Length: 130
Image (cartoon, rainbow, N blue to C red; front, side):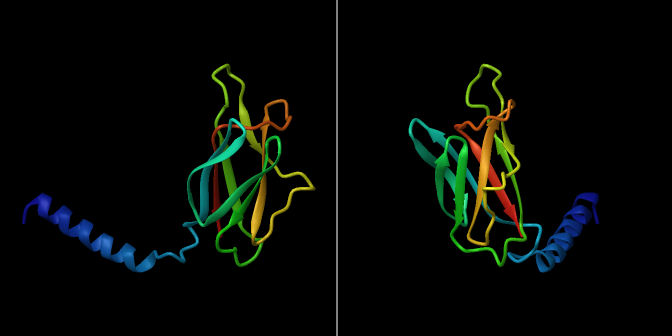
């Protein structure tokens, strides 16, 4: 048996083993994600999974509503924001304020400048794990 065929057989066995351990309910898989931005005067959703809508509640502040609610509000979310200009002005996803909410149905996220003032971005990426 050649090295190539041994590696192929091993890869096949590993694939079968992993297939039985990881399915759609695995906690390491994202339960929801969305790539969106505020372009011109409107929200543009480029791609998403388990997201019903994205609403701009104020400059740099958004509510992401899930298509299928989470079991509870004990989920983890992370976001990444692209700078809206090429001038070196950075945008960051910041920690929620006390007025923002995190429920089983939706999560409020904020986008800000490095000076911590709320501002929009043409691309925001949000991922939710539960």
